[in-house]
Structures are given as structure tokens and as C-alpha cells.
Length: 92
Length: 391
Image 1 (cartoon, rainbow over the protein chains, first blue to last red):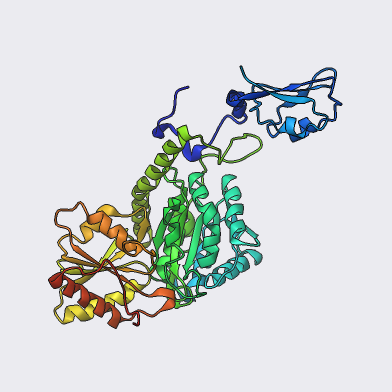
Image 2 (cartoon, one colour):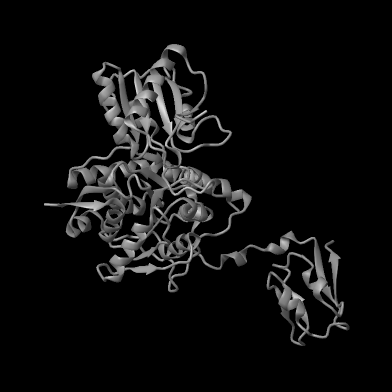
């Protein structure tokens, strides 16, 4: 990525391509990823509700998973999952 | 022919805003700014102008709501004082970073504590580094003129920065002065509609006030600094235009009988007029003394101040705020740092005076000038002095 010089900064740092935050993959920050054990998952959706990145979605069977492009690996889902279905596993 | 009327300066400030075709005002009343808030709300309520007056619950909300309104392209105004300005502080650098041309009248008042409703500059000085164009009015006419000019300066495509007009509380806001008002037609000619660089609108979404990572933040700060430094060029242009249309001239630094004077008093705000009388009396006695008045505080008029004091041996810089534990008062520090690299720099004395509404009389300015004359002989013995403090 070419970094702007100060002369190239848009006035007021305005962004004219709204929604371009999705181009920034915060998943690159991740040190640990959440792994679901679907034998323990009761599909309550508490992981989905608590995810601060709103990056957890459901598969065709209704089980949950994280979009790893944006999951920062914060582990809140694993902390909040009361049936204990989510484990944080170190990235290899 | 413009109308000349006797009017309280706070009311006149609101009347000036009423001529500027504003879209939104959000003003929370606070002494000694209240008459501006009340009168502007009357102007809107009476249907004299077609604007929205938001009756906010605090100054934090007044500046926040204007931030949003200005981002949609509206012409906006607020006014405050002292604690109200302190309460706005969090938003002030955001407004300038977003390049929103909000105009604010500040009825300068001491900051608590102890609680004081009277005039000094301790409210504006903590806002110094907020990225706002900051100017000081000396009398009611200047308040009216500078309020109108400020919209044009702030909204200029090469500026796009907020601007404040500082009006000494009570000493200016509550004085009845003869003021010449331009007509609506004249103001319309001088101040066309705002043409915003970009606006918040659902049909064409953009992001304002975004986040910056460490790899961008410094570039954004540099761009903002250059923007305010460069705004001086436009300020000068707008003042020239004003002079051409209305005949009254404005300069970043004004001088009074300063040519060839050995000692120069330096003031900012309404006390300049009192100091002028002191200069007259001293010059009658043959004392080589003149007056320099700083009108534009940010961007600081470096070249203009250097030119104005060229050849002077001593500058007696007055301050109406304290930078507790600092090298001098805020203006004193600024002026000293400006001259550090100058080969023939003058001696600089610094008097902190007129705090919390304490009167500063002609006699006081004469004494300060005499102290400065003394300093020329004996040298500087202290970085700053609380002038006239008992003890």
C-alpha cells in the first residue's frame, strides 16, 4: 500500500468511498482463532450477539462460525459461550 | 449609507449574526455571553431570519450539534464563555480536524476557581492549540465586522476551519457603543452562500471524522497545521475586501504611534483602547513609547509582529491569563519564542494583569511602560510579573 504524503491527505480526512473499511482485513491481527465444537453447540447464538466485530455468522445447518478475514481473535465468544463449545486455538 | 446606532455590544454581535444568513445556531446561555444567546434566539423566534435555533442542554451539546449541522453544509454559529468554552474543549480540535467552518463568539471570562464571572483571557488560552482561527476584537464595531468576516474566512475553500471572535466579557459585551451596521444587501454582497467542499447526505454517502492509524495520524496533523498557517493569506484577502467595501481596515497586528518608539506595549483585546490613552500621555511627556495590538492570535502573525516592533528596544507584553508554572504568560511566551532567533531581538518584559475583571487603568499602563523603560536600563530581572498584585 502506498502511504499518503501530508499533501495528499483529503481535507478533514474525509473518506469518499464509504464502506471501504471492509477492505481492511483485521483478521491479520489475530493470534488465536475460535474453533466451534458443534457437538456441544446448542445454537443459542450468544457468540453471535457478543462478537464486537459482528463477524460471526451461521452455516446452512444453523451452526456458528467466524469470518476469519475480520475475526481479531479476541476470544469474547469463547468466554461467553456457556455450553463451552468454543475453544481458542493458537494460530500456527 | 450604513446605519449608525447605539447598541449593547452583545446584542450587536447577535444582530451581526442575524445578517449572515445562518442556517443553524445552537447557543447555551452563560454570563457574560447570555445577551448574545437571548437576542439571537429572539431574532430567530421573531421570524426575522430563517434559521434553526437549537435550545441545547449544554455547551458540549451546542458545539456537537453544530458539528453535525456544519457537516451537512449548514452555516452555523454558537457563542459561549468561560466554563462553557472549557466544556466544549473536547470537541474543538475535532471541529477543526473535520474542517468545519463553525463561527463562535466568545465573551471572554475568567475560568473558575475561585468562581468569577468577570473578564480575562483564561478561557480562550487553554483552547490555543485546538486549530481554530482565533481573533480578538477591541470594540463593538470590530465585534460586528469580525463576526461577519469570520464566516467568509472560515468557509473559504482554502481555509475550511472554524473561527472564534473573542469579545472581552462585560468590558465589551455589556458596553453600549455607537456601531455602524452594514445593510442586509451589503452583507449579502460580501458574504455569499456557503459552498461546502463536501456534505453528509444520504444520496451521496461519505465518511467524516474517521479514524487514523499511527501511520497516517502525523500526516493529518501536518496538513491541519499547514491549513491554519495558510489561512492567514485568506484572512488578509477578506480583510482587504472588507476595507474596500466598508472602508474599515483590519490587520493581524495593529499599531498605535509605534513608529520609532523604544518601548512598545503589546496588548490583545479591548484594553488596547485604554493603552492608547496611556501612550498619548507618555508621548506628551517625551517618553519614547508606542503600542502594538495583536488582533490575530491563531494563526499567529509572525511576520507582521516582527515588522511592527522592528527597532524597538523593549517590548512590554501584557497577558490576561496565567500559564501556571510556565515561563511566562501565554502571550509572553509566544512573543519571546518568536524573537529568540532574531539577531537584534528586543528585551521582553511580561505583565500579567486584568485577571478576573480587575480594572487596568490608563495609570496602570503608564506604570507598566515606565517599568519597561527601567528594564531597558537595568535588564530583565524576572520572566513575568503579576502586575499590581498586593503583597
